[in-house]
Amino acid sequence: MNNNEIVLIGSYCDTQIKLDTLEKQIDSLKLLNLDILVFGRYPLPQHIQKKCDYFIFDKSNPILKDRVLYNYLFTHGKKINFIFQDHGYAALEQITKSLGFVKSLNYDIAYWLVYDVDVTEFSSFRELSLIKLKNHNAVCHNYFPKSTQFSSGIDGTSISFKVQTAYDKLKSTMTETFYRDLIKRKNEDFISEDFMEECFRVSEMNHYIMKPKPNLPAILSSTNNRKHGEIPSSLPKINKYFKRCFIGLNTDINKCVIWIDNILQSFEEISFMINDKEIITKKNIKTNNHGGVEIIINKATQLKIISIDGETINELLDPELTKQYWTVNNIKNYQI
Image 1 (tube, rainbow, N blue to C red):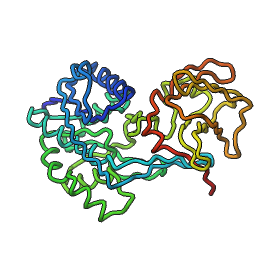
Image 2 (tube, rainbow, N blue to C red):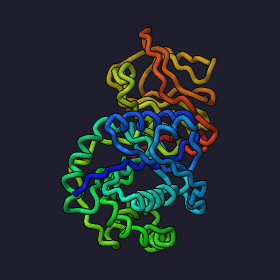
Image 3 (tube, one colour):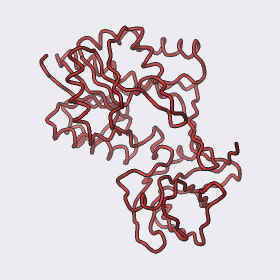
Image 4 (tube, one colour):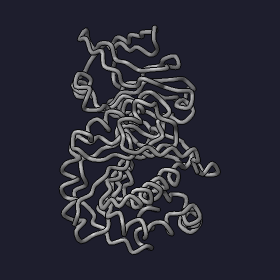
């Protein structure tokens, strides 16, 4: 097989943190001497475009506005909710459009990545893909929702394809008509990962499932925040104290709160910066009966931890908390 390879990156980078995340990913991948195509639903600055070999801007964004999805996590006596429109098909359509373009350029192998995937261990994924694509049309891994230990469909954040055959198989099945039909025939829990799995089945896509799945975690969620409030490994000082810090609207009391759990080292005082000027300090901190800490705040535009028990932290968790963020992220008490 002629290993004529290209990386395909799907994006909708409408905030600075998303742009920074995409640019960092591109810079890392360019060190591997791979061609890069970025497919964007939102315009990119010229300096980022120039780092790519190809940039496709498609202003169409087929979000299913008539369908609302709910993502949630139960943790330490709380239910954390994310409410959002169905972006699934809009995201996956980028795959077929990108594959069609690179097929016309006679590429053999394409690595599909979402813009916020951490590519630190991409080389391992690439190495296995090159082996398995000799006898398969795609290499992928299962999706495991945070709320369950069971897999649900195929994870659409990182997939490798044998371009010339994969595109021909997917172009007639990965359509909005088929997506909507599956929603009707399945149930309300149907998600884009299920759609990907069904497209592979119907198109008879010969694919290899990686087990265990590759270490290519998505850093951001569709609403531009850390997934479920998890602390990224790039913030070691915070990680020393706790593993989750979620900010959202507590619907039980209708107030904005900071929620901390998975506490590794107890602390009594913590200071936050919640916008460019406002710093709040909480003293005499005590955990609730479930081992979590809740702090009431004014609505924030960012979240930075300044210090914990006098130790200087100065680590930025959420650079941008937009108006949309506060409409889709909430938390409430939960009792079994």
